[in-house]
Length: 365
Image 1 (cartoon, rainbow, N blue to C red):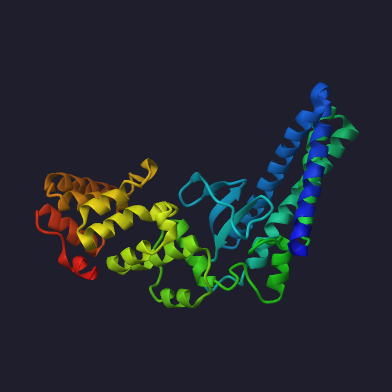
Image 2: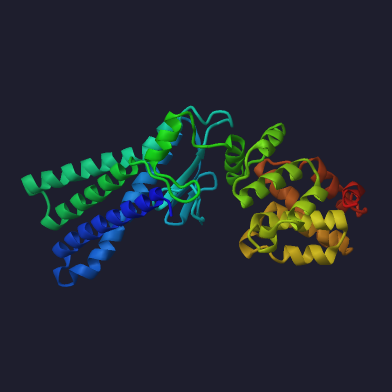
């Protein structure tokens, strides 16, 4: 274990102990008979509130300078602003103590401008909230505005938040890309950025997280020249380029060779995988087996319905395929969307009960 990793663990332990002590102090005023057990619970609540303040600070700073915020995560629960929903997310390799914010600039070359502001947002939010909470608690003590328990609770929150904010300014590194905000600020000071050596890859990852794919095709060459990143993210990016270019044969080869896909860890690509296999190999049995892996929660998506259309047509059930096409056209019209050229050719063939477009089948050779 590196010395820096040991420091990270030590600081985490100190922060937990402070949170537990503060929680015990709070519980003593509210429930003195069971103070120690409830103190642990109060301590975790204080720590959770401070982490949320920290990540919200990063997100607000990013929005303030015109960046897009893709994920705000605390304790594995993430909020996706573009989709306006909560989602369970895996801990990022560059995450903070117990969460992370994933944001990106408007263009892939804009990482340097604003990186320091985004990093500073988290600890400064903790420090501001901490000082304000301690000041409010002190005012309560002086003027007896509310009860002693309320004063202690607010003061404890201020102490934990202030500790988290100041502690994050200390420069230490963990495993992989994990680092404190102080370490990130040092990196930025010496010419780095939040994107590290992957400005295009990280920017594209943000676009994919938001469900967007309208980026310039010229970025593909730059992406391929960058060092490898997270295997799942890189596979999503390559798959998006292949889908946008209509290279379904390339998509099948990519996902056939992906261990992550075989392990069922690329769920968002599974319907596209089934669709590509059905069109390029005309193997309805294999495509159906792949499509069956798609979880129920993802079966209302466009790419799942598109795969169903191809499978129905391959099985000769043009009535079912045509009904699905009609439903998709109605949905697309309602939201102002239009199928791309390849999808339009596919839908038209199904509506006319003609064989599926042959150009995709030739790609499999």
